[in-house]
Structures are given as C-alpha cells and as structure tokens.
Amino acid sequence: MSRKLDDILIDSGIINAEQLKKATLYANQNNVSLGDATIKLGFATEEQITIALSKHFSVPYASKENNILIPEKEQNLQDVVNEKFARENMVLPLFLEEGVLAIAMYDPSNVFLVDNVKMMTGYDIQPFIASKSQILTAIDVFYGGKDLIEEVVVGNAAVKEEEGDDIEVISVEGKLDLDTLKGSGSHYIKLVNAILKQAISERTSDIHLEMFDEMVSLRFRIDGALYERTPPPKESVAAIISRIKILSKLDIAEKRLPQDGSFAIKYQNRTIEVRVSVCPTVFGEKLVLRILDKGTSVLTIERLGFEPRQREDFLSAANLPHGLIFLTGPTGSGKSTTLNAVLSTIKTTELNFMTLEDPVEYKLQGISQVQVKPQIGLTFAAGLRSFLRQDPDVILVGEVRDNETAESCLKAALTGHLVLSTLHTNEALGAIPRLIDMGMEAFLLSSSLALVAAQRLIRKLCPHCRRPFTPSPELVEQALRESKLPPGDKDTWTFYQKVGCPKCSETGYLGRMAIYEVFKINEEMRNIIYKTQDLIDLNRAAERSGAWNLRASGWRKAVKGLTTHEEILSVTTLEE
Image (cartoon, rainbow, N blue to C red; front, side, top):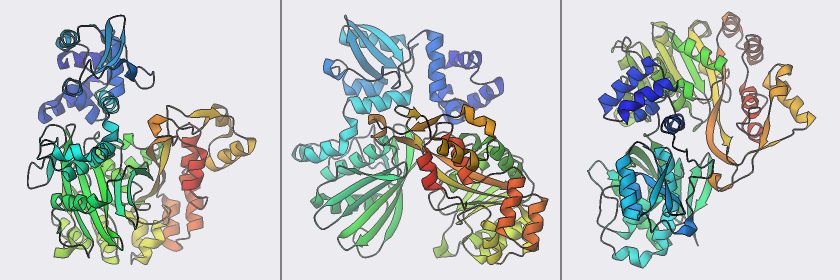
C-alpha cells in the first residue's frame, strides 16, 4: 500500500510535497512504513490517514465513536476468528449478518488477508477500515486483555502449571518483549507481565504497589489521578518486587534502604522505559514504577497546548542566538516534555545542541544528551562548565537547583549561547526574584533573560461522553473577566460538563494537556528587572504587552470545550 499511500496523502491534502520527502527519508532510514513515518514526524494523525484511506478505497470507516469498532460479543465471534490470528494479522471481527462477516483491518488493499479470513471462517467478508492503534485496543478489550491481572490472580493454580508465557528477559540490559517471546512460566513473572501490560493499555504514567497491615494496594496513575486496580495476593508482593529489582539491577537483599533503577520493555513494537523506585515502609517495601512510552510521535511544539501567540513568542525566543529561557512549574507538570519539544522543533545540523539532564527522558536524534551523575562529580554545574568547551550553540540544563548552576547558566548566556532550563516556582515571573536570590546580578539578568514561562497539566474532557450545558451569567462573566478575551468572543463559546462512560472509566476525563503563561521579556520589563524586580509591576508590564496568565489560558481551553471550568479553577489561582 505504501506505493499508493504517497499519492493518497498528497491528493487528500494531508501533507505537502516537502513533508512527503521528509517522511519518505525517515521511513527508509528507520525501516518503518510511510504511514508510520508521517505519524511519527507529526505531519498527520492516525485518524486523518485512516479516513483518507477509507475515502480512497470506498471502505467504511470503523471507530469507537460510531460504535462500529465494538464487536458483537453475543455472537461468539471469538470462536470465528481466534485471538492469535487477530493479533498476528491486525484484524478484528465486528458482527455477522446474513452470512456476511464484517471485519476491521488497517490496510483495505490487502485482498490476500480478506481471502484468508473468508477461507478460514467460511463467510463472505465485508471489510471496514480502522487505525492500527484502535484495532489493537479493541482486540485487548474483545479478547479479555483488560483483565490481565485479575485473570492471573484468579487462575493461580492453572497459571502455575503452565510452562510458557509471552514475556521473557532477552538481555542482561533488562529488555522484555511482551508480544512475541516465550518464557519459563513463573507465576510471579506472569503477574509482573500482567501488571505492566494492563498499565500500558490504560495509558498509565505510574504504578503504585504497596502493602498495609491487612491489605495490598495496586493503583494506576491515569491523567494525574490514582485509581485502584485488582491487587496481587499479599503473599506474592515480595516476589513481585524481587522480580522488578532483578530487571532493574537492584540489590534484592537490601530491604532497609530506598533504591532506584530502571529497565526497558518492548510492547507492540514500542520501546518503553520503566523507572523503578523502591522505598521501605513499616509494612514492607513500596514499589513505584514510572512508565515512559517511547513509541509516541516525535515531539514538536505544535503538538503541545500553546495558544498561537504563546507558541510564536516561545519559538521567537528559542531561535535567538543567545540568552536565557526559563520554564517553571511543579514536578510532574510536563516541563521536560515542553523543552524537549522545543529542541526538536528548532534543531538543525547547522548548530550544536547539547543537553544536561537528570534523568534523560527523551532520546533526541541529532542532539548530544548527557545524564547527570552527582555520585561521581558530574553535577549540573560541572557538566555545564565542560559543555562550554564543546563549542555548543544551544544548551538545555534540566534544572537550576543551586547558585553555582545559576551562575554557570548566566555565564553561558553572556558568552553567546542560548540556554534553556527549568525552575520550581509557582509562576513564570517568580523565576526572576528566585534567580537573583541565587546570586545572579540584576543588571546581567535583565540583559540576558529572553523569556520566562510556566505550565500546568489539566485533564481533557472525554470526547465520547462530554455534554454541553448553558452556563450561568455569573460563570460567563467570570470567564470573560479572567480569560482576557474580547467581549464579542463569548457568543462563540461552548461550555461542556463531564459525564463519564466506559471509555474514560466513568471519570469524564480522557488524557491531559498543558496550559501555559508565556512572557517574552521586552524593554519595559528589562528596566523593572534592573531597578526593582517588583512582581506586580512585572505582571502589569506583561499584561500591557498582550500576554496572559495560566488562569486565562485555562479559560481559553474551557470555552472551547476541551476541559471543564471546575478543572481550571482547581489547577490555577488568580495570583498566577
């Protein structure tokens, strides 16, 4: 299909000729399909490509939204098309009607697959088209993949007797293949695998496993909130933690001190890093796993939650030949993701990009990345001093934690380098007094600071169940006042409320997005930094320049129906 896909993408207006050229080069260099390359580079979404193929081949589009990609379970289609065949061929049986079997597939031009299904089932075939990820998710649900942990726990005796499993350690580096490899069949290995699989399928960012006096707790952090899941038996927790320690090269005998490590897994052709933290408690060790999915699309600033004016200001500052850019926010607010997306957007072979991080969360092609190792003396300050002898143009410092690092960043900016870093302050302009407290001279900071920004993560409304509502006049007035939007815009606003459905686990929210405040430093603000550093004056100057704060950014998402006003009011404050 790839030979025709380029024409389809161009003819449908999804990509242009230059993007096609880049996608083709990426596909050849990375041995992936043209469609996957287009998605990876952020030129198109899976849904856009799938809809274009649907129109081109005149094959109906199946999705969860139109309720077609939900197989009829009462027809026992699992017996018609078995799970092994479905996964190997990326095909899903949908329904059977008058001797015709409807199936979902991602490549409607694959007539051989249609013929194989027809021969295997004995039915005429009506193909529907769906994206790969939608089919894989639907297969997980249809064939029971969502209840992996419960299946292993409930089926203890049977599981222990089995000799094979679909997970195995394939190298001393701790890499697992969750799809294709066969292992030794240990019950505890099965439990670990089931927990990882279910967590990944539910878009989990963190897994919490801990013991209490009378119970075991297993929780998944999804979209920023923790949700209870089926816990493993209490007697198996120690063995599960030992299994994780082995994979992450930790000391399995040490149960008195906290330990940190990591390992990598392969799942559905995606490389996923798992960060491990083990901490002793009065009831035993607590295990927290951070899941970093490397299979997502290439990071670019266009894929983040910037408003157009904010994106323009950030890119303008990021393309300066020298200066300081600081992004602020609490831990876990997505600062590293944003800065890595900025680097991915502005990187070019004509410049030398270097990063100093703790830890390195994203591997970026064409950028030299260094992991901080304080135990051997490689601190942020020491690494930055070394960087200056590496002829860098753009430097990313993961975090400014001390005076020495702050002074090194300032020195780098003053000697002709662009430096991007983060700080832990509640608001963007709060970075200025914090940096001065760290020893930066006000007159030097005023001349070198290019931009300060802050961000928060907010939950997105579930598009499957959100419901519009008519806001009260007081709510509209509050939104108008705090969003800084023109009064005439309110006629185009649509407010939505959360409802809850199976697709969002009845929470009403599905996924998260970032909101920002972005302040490009102008001459008026430079004078204030040099003379008084007064935050009230700085905020007024920023507002006069046309910028706005986090609360205003949040309202701009809410009036578009992307989130709820309750979410905005809980995440932001008027002081911000």
